Image 1 (cartoon, rainbow, N blue to C red):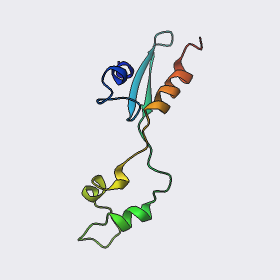
Image 2: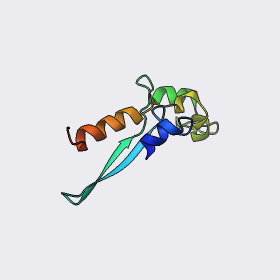
Image 3: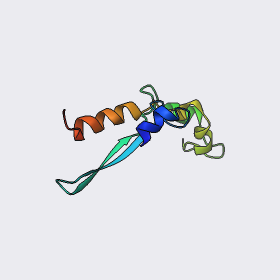
Image 4: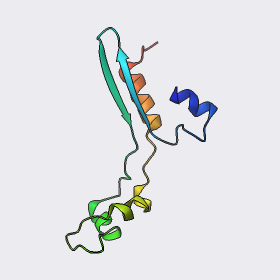
Length: 95
């Protein structure tokens, strides 16, 4: 459904975001999960977060989650396309 909504409502969901899927394989009677959440940029490190998002009242190098949430470091690389690719390769029919 989410993939179809990406076409009919691209402003609400689509390839520019994340995807999560539960897939039921009836022949195995098992449920599989696919996590298509975005990844952090490769250049992001703990040291960068400690420098850019420090807690004001703490000297233990802890990260202020509120500062982080509203910083450019909270942006992830969209994971929907890779998630759909993983779903196809792991559970597709191959036809």
